[in-house]
Amino acid sequence: MVERSDFSSGTSSRSTKLIHGGVRYLQKAIMKLDYEQYMMVKEALHERANLLDIAPHLSAPLPIMLPVYKWWQLPYYWAGIKMYDVVAGSHCLKSSYVLSKSKALELFPMLKKDKLVGAIVYYDGQHNDARMNLAIALSAARHGAAIANYTEVVHLLKKPDPQTGQEKVCGARCRDMITGQEFDVRAKCVINATGPFTDSLRKMDNQKTPNICQPSAGVHIVIPGYYSPDNMGLLDPATSDGRVIFFLPWEKMTIAGTTDTPTEVTAHPIPMEDDINFILNEVRNYLSPDVEVRRGDVLAAWSGIRPLVTDPNSKDTQSICRNHIVNISDSGLVTIAGGKWTTYRSMAEETLDAAIKAHNLSAGPSRTVGLMLEGGKDWTPTLYIRLVQDYGLENEVAQHLAATYGGRAFEVAKMAHVTGKRWPILGKRLVSEFPYIESEVQYAIKEYACTAIDVIARRTRLGFLNVQAADEALPRIVEIMGKELQWTEQKKKEELEAAQKFLHLEMGYKARSEQLSKTSEISLNAQEVARYKKRFYKFDKESKGFITTLDVQQVLERLNIQIDEDALHEILNEVDLNKNGQVELDEFLQLMSAVQRGQISDSRLAILMKTVEEGLDLRGPVTVDRSGGGF
Image (cartoon, rainbow, N blue to C red; front, side, top):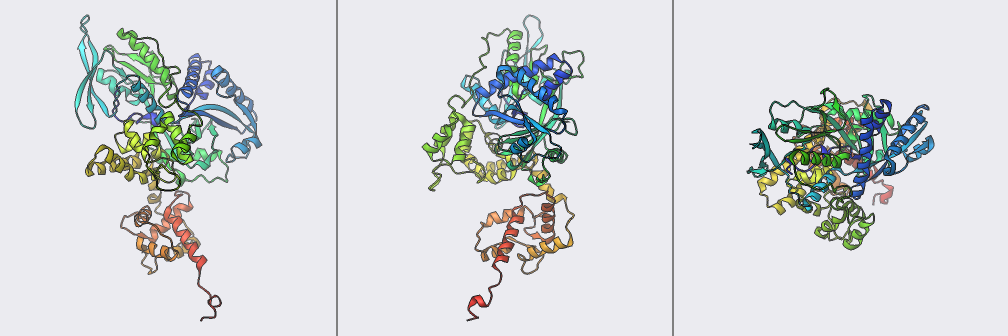
């Protein structure tokens, strides 16, 4: 198995993180009496149960609330959701239930109260998609598969069939993307399982073959965890564009998405500002007016390409296939396209059955139902307690390791360095607000990580959770990887730049930082301008019209506050739009204007200057009577 980039670097790491049967597909199946849709949901619900069983550390059931704002919808939605439970049968995770308005608000206090009549809660699964993908790859390797990431197929190898004389696929010419070395891999059968890139592989086989993939971009955003309860998702069944929007807690943050727009196939999809704002607007429709949904609260955003397909075997080639298709070309290339995360295992089984039959291969029946994935076998819900007791790890870190590596968490803990503190004894964090520790970077290399992007995006999920935190962790990640992999200084520099570019374009950092630079107009009233000017001149003592790190340091010293010079430079650099090493008054007013409008939510400079101003005002001048009459 060869992968041009890293395992899960495409759509597999950019999903909604749900393991679901498809509530909306069941609705269509019932409304249109569509048996194919019904069977698709039934299969997905079976696979959902299996996936939760074989990777218990990476997946868990998640209750999802469907708020109801019209009385007639309550029995309608309830019947549909109950049907979902019935179709799941013995694989039903937990039975769905109806909630009164007061109970719904108790469980989901951020919900809009106006016109709410009640809610229905049903259960689906949730997982860490990139880690799940990696667990599948590692499990395959442990069972004897040869797997390689950063290995591209350059072209397919063919030879004439002795009986018919027709050209048949017999392998592939591959290129090592890191060294550039090329080599041939011979095979009795070649399977094309490349998602959005399905057609490029099919055209390697036959240039004249028509396209079957109709790529669609789905954007998701990550906002702080306080937007949703810890263990309750939300489903908006009818958005303004007709697509379902999910609003889900994930890794102590909140994910909202997704969009559905036609797109070009690319290995580096970029989330667009329009898509981010569309999701934010839909979220506003469902949350209480008390909760201000701010553009500045978007901590990360990403776009994934859905590989929707048309069936080349059907007469009506225009209709998009809702399920997956398996196609075998004249030369014997087996293509599996379409489908979704939840049904990956049954898709693989069906593909191999077709390949075995078409190429007359010898194989026994599939054994993957119930086959535990990497880390799942030794995992228990209380495993993290042993990590705390045996290695002196922080509780949060231990829970994270157990939920990420399962039974392999002990190997990561053994590699952790002593902190030198009373507590925690082991496990130095990469960034203070996330439980990722330095030894995970070393362990990531054992899990085939080759670049810094592999670590921030897929071995850990830091890039998907908070782009600024990921950017902050990058230098240390590159330093650790450089030491382990013996990188030169030039290679370290290239890795750092590549990872920063990835965060900037693919994880929404660009869209985030542009919120300040785009809004050159200052929408503050005269009173607000006067207030912020007063704050600015507390730092700009000489009325130069700008402040530097030196100005800020001098004020901090008066309050006995110490901040590292490099950190201070970083804080100012976020606001320094023209990058001249200083923050002008206009830039500061622009920042405060963006903060007022909610376009920027966590500017360190804005919060620092406000705190310092309050500290200076509290100190005030010392009165004469306090000083003993002047003596």
